[in-house]
Image (tube, rainbow, N blue to C red; front, side, top):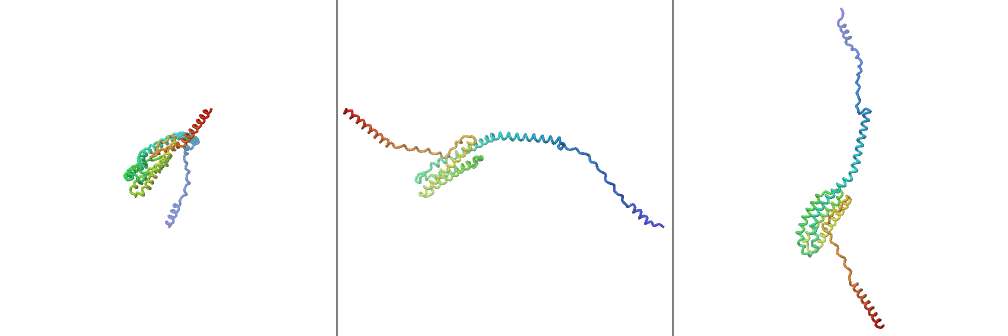
Length: 259
């Protein structure tokens, strides 16, 4: 009898063998067209367009440079005029108070010393308003230093007003030096303001503008006239010349008589 199991196992073994796989077939990809800007003609067109844009930019920059000085000068002049008007308004607030301080008593024995306490409060209140207005003025870069001088002047005027208010509260022996200190603060504040006006006028001249016309809060006092030379010497000379002429005439008369 044949052994079935062996035949069956052999048949299974022969069927279990795998066949070799076939080689992969080459895939043919379709040819793609290049974008227009990557072609020679497209690159030439792009280069030409870039040159045109660059030339337009250069022309615009040159035109802007030629027109910039005129426009910047006009803007600078307008800014300086606006700033000058603000300082003129500030001067109208500070000048009356500074003028009253200029008329303050200078001697400890002056009867007006007792009224300095009340006057000082009024002056200080007015100058506080002026300081507030000065803080709201925004200068252009060219006049920042002048603005600092104006602000410092107002602050120093306020300090002088406070010093005047202390005079009636101190002994009589200390009033004289305190009055002198207040006067020095007042005069220094006036000098600082004038320095600010000079700086402002310099910047206005650079911008081809006329003087601001601003004055110091306390106008300068006119100089005293120089003393005239005494007429005593000239009178003596006249007398001497008269005596000489008289003597000469008498001599001439005597000679004529003798003749």
